[in-house]
Image (cartoon, rainbow, N blue to C red; front, top):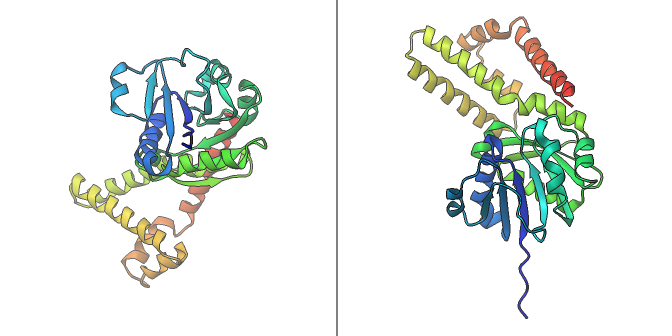
Length: 275
C-alpha cells in the first residue's frame, strides 16, 4: 500500500525585508528540515517571474481563489497597521489544526486571536541577522498552541538562527529591547569604534577591517568558551597595560554600564507603548 504524502501548507502573508529574508532561510534548509512543505507567499507586489525560481514556493498577489486551499500555518509578515485588514481573510482559510504566527511588532496575542477567530497564536520576534541565518528569535505562544504547533514554528525559526521561548508578552517586549533592537546598538558601537580608529591614523577601510574582525573574533571566542565575560576580559587585561588604560577610559566610571541600562529600558518602554 502506498502511503499518502501529507504536504504542509504554509502561507507567508507579506514579502517585505524580514519576511523575504526568513523565506530565503526556510528554502535553504527545506530539503533537510522541512520535507513535504509548500510555501504560499502572498503579497500584492509579487510578480509572475518569481514562480520559476523556487519549486517549493508559489508567489501570489492574493489568496488562492479556491476555498479548498487550506493552510496549516499562516505567518503574518505585514506592517502592524494593516494586520486587521488582511488577517481575517487568511484565518478563515486555516485547516482545522492550523494556527497563526506573527512577526508584526506591537500586535498582541489577544488582538491576533480576535482577528483570527480564536485560532492558536504564536508571536515571533526575529532580529536582523536572521537574514544570514545568524539571528536570535523570541517566541511566545498562547495557551491554545499545541506542542506540534510550537515545534513547527521553532523548527522554522531555527533555520534563521537560535530561538528562545519566553513565558509571556512582557518578556517578549524585554527580549525585543535586547535582541530585536540589539543589532542597531552593535552597529552604532562598531561605527564609533571605526571612527575612533580612523582618527588614530588608519584609513577608513583598514579601520573597518580591524574593528569588525576584532569584534567577530572576540564574539566567536566568547561563544566557544565556558568562561564568563568578566573572566575573558580579565584574561586580556594586564595590570597597568594598554588594555587596562583603554578600559579605564571606556568604563572606569561605570558610565558605559549605565548607558546600556538606559538603552534597554528606553527600548522596552517603547515596546510597551506599541502594544
